[in-house]
Image 1 (tube, rainbow, N blue to C red):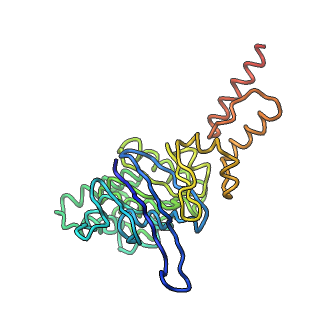
Image 2: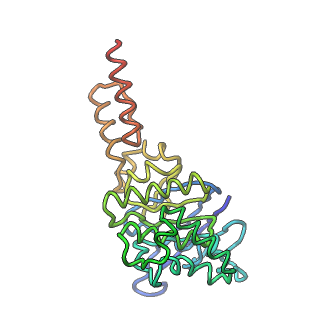
Image 3: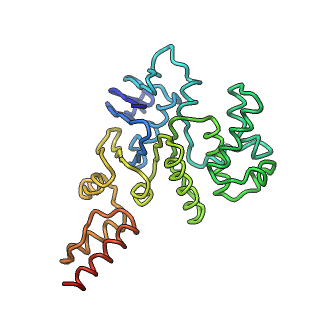
Length: 287
């Protein structure tokens, strides 16, 4: 188990008229090598939660264990924790500042005091992981790139720290469809080839359905639902009660089944729906 949260609470502006409980008695475990989707409306507590995981926010009460270390203890080494848990914020390209792509990605490893040879290896590998050509782009300014490429540079900067856990907060926000598909494809490849534990924060039911193994749903500072991806999306009514939905293709298949067609209604992706519909039409043709 790489992450464990025990009775985690967080209150904004305590003992003031603006006091607000953002996290309410959270108990969660995330296994190493898991790919978790974190869903919830704005204000549900999901961004506050992920900022606790690398020590950016200290809890009001409760415990946070990361890779066996209690990061809420006074002895906790937050620099070490932030190496283990990489956090990519929304619009991370706004944090690019160096004159070349190489220097931007090398910034974190340099701060770790690594040798130049190791920094070079990490920058090259991180660029490969996000699909950026090292020789072609390393000396270019990050500000000359497209939105999707800038975002990949920002993600590479976190990957160059070699984290065991990668948290991505709305990684496709504001991107065009091409940039969005590129980022999602790279995230999927990262998970499959590097075995990094990934937590994906997203409003997109389609992205969550396509990528993750497990879903955590936040609502009013609490964990409202938790389980395997298909199991959570099967509870469409419960999701709708808290103002969330299910993937459009799942919704279509539920309606189609409701009209008397004998099809599975737990499909999550367009590819699954296509396969199910082809099989159904074949069954009907052979009947």
